Length: 261
Image (cartoon, rainbow, N blue to C red; front, side, top):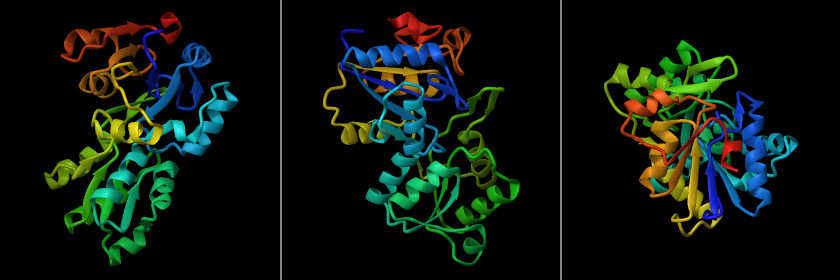
């Protein structure tokens, strides 16, 4: 562990499971931070408010500032601001995603408003309160010409009650209905989210970076793609048997992060 200057960790399935702390992993990351390692959290969960997540983690004894947290919602907002002419959005997502859209001065339209004025973009993330009507409204907006921005294509999401549908499962309903792919996917394994993290946190060199995550197809693939070393921790979604079936291989596999230190 002494070889790494920066550790990029996932949140869901690594630090918390639907808000419930995963203590072995928290203690390990806290220990690494005490040893002087820089810790950045990069999460596909766009539902998090970075401010509220920072407060929660500090309460659990892990000193993380909002600027040390990169969500797929933040990644999507920065992409749209820099690379599109989007002004108005219809959000299928939770508080954190709406917050990031407003932080970047996008006008967030209600369901009633989009029926009269089609938004420039539909932005979809994890939404645990989504309804059939909300997905249908988003689908109609995309069919009428709105850009289709997805925070991530995670199939599954680790909750304290077991696996649940991820943002990608929700996005797939619109993809299937319209037979079209999203215009942009902001989160892991897309390297864009790491570019955002590097810029916002001043990371220069990826050769001394360790990526920690619980999903082969997102966390580990992204880490492998950027040339970083990777750790798969078995406290979330992926299991040992998944590694045997996959072409995506982590450098290290541990039951929990305490085994790293």
